[in-house]
Amino acid sequence: MTVPPDQRSEAELIERAIVGDDRAFEELTRRHHRSVRAFCRRIATRTGDGDDIAQSAFLTAWRRRSTYAGGAFRSWVCAIAWRIFLKHPQMDTAAEVADEGTLASDGERLDLMNALASLRPEERAAVALCVGEGLSHAEAARVLDAPIGTVKSWTLRGRARLQTMLSDYAPEYRGGASR
Image (cartoon, rainbow, N blue to C red; front, side):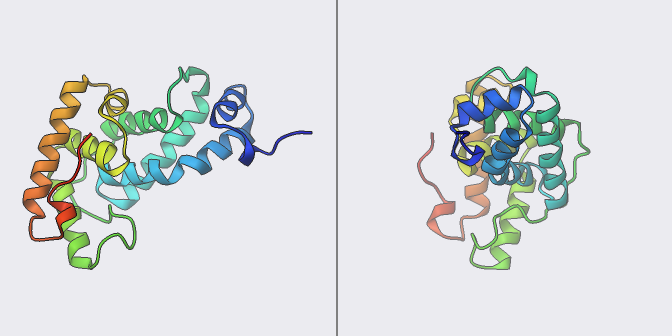
């Protein structure tokens, strides 16, 4: 009896996707689309651009599935998204980067969007991966193709700038555990 894709382990899905099983890849996409999309929205600062980058990243992952060399599937797709972002025209206009309902008001949401948009792209990506997506500094370093110490610096500087800009809001914007 064949096990449905939604009941397979991630390792099995990856193995099957690499050999061209589109249902396995579809399940991997379903499992990781939300977090990859959130990462892309945070680094691009414009929802439409972030959504486009996420879609391109998954399409590229499908086309280049034979190049997958291990590690977390989500991190691999985020790395693809990061490379696409670096080639994508930089947009300075802020737009929705927060998940719906995570902030109490439109004013807070706009302030967060503007604060994220003011960070250098590398800082924004490091904060989005380590704080927003919960990746370790080592995982983020693989995604961003940068030394771990550099990623730690980007994360610390980005968090510090965000904390300063958002200091009028709730304590969760002023600090918290770092990785």
